[in-house]
Image (cartoon, rainbow over all chains, first blue to last red):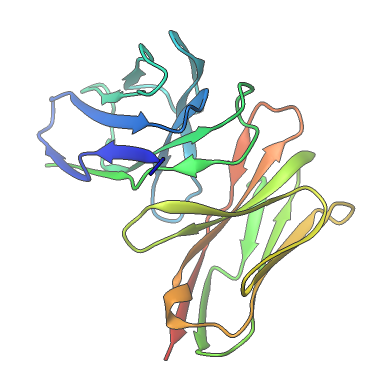
Length: 115
Length: 109
């Protein structure tokens, strides 16, 4: 079945550690996104990528990094510079090359807790 | 100020009731999305619409572009409809999705 796979589903990290969240899609979508979800807030865009080897900062990119070496994969690294990393992270993709258009497809999310 | 506002924030209904969730937005849009977030956290797209009305099973989505308003209706609600429903819009410049904060729906048997 086509879809988006995020891993791990739950992750615990000590302060000062970097952690990488995986996002893989087999939908052949061009655009991929990382969102952060906090209680009582709408999804906020961290990074997005329109094509391989290209990505753009979203509204809250500080303390995060991404790569897009393959069309199928868009991993997110939460670095120690991110001041408040405990959150629910959602990866999404959409079929069109133009970002922020088309139907959105989401993964199951990764919940990161910093101890 | 949020570009997308939803109401109500929380909603509890008895099984079988007709449910309406509202969404208002303040930006020019090319499309509006209704999303469903399950308790485990995964999100699925229910509808993407730019005008009129769409129906899928017991779910109906409508949009009024002039009034910048959309509604999601659930007929004959069921406990499995319990989820968070999120309204999102595609800004017409194509530069951004904007998301509402969600409506948490609980349907009691």
